[in-house]
Image (cartoon, rainbow, N blue to C red):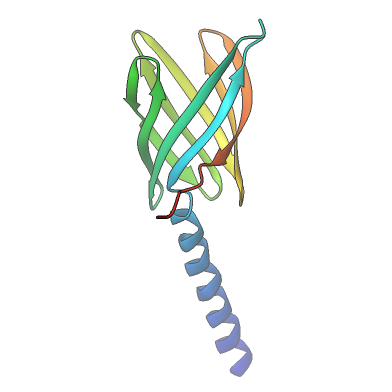
Length: 122
């Protein structure tokens, strides 16, 4: 009886901790994207995670664009950003201190790693 209670309590704590970890993915993440031609583009995403839903914005030279169709499944995620008539698909994985992202657009694919932008405290 005690073993069942302890096992159940432990599982509930792990479940709650995983939801707390998901909310930690919300925030600003930055990095760079290097293309096959050697061009480097700065990246900045503002993620908002609510349960299994991922929303927010992606900063582009054309301004902030909304994150569409964002889903989180454990540490994995996917979303799209629409720039003009181009749909840019993002898939990746959240880690403790970084985000691994695969980006696909117009048949081209790229991979990058984002880091959490440090907040300056006043």
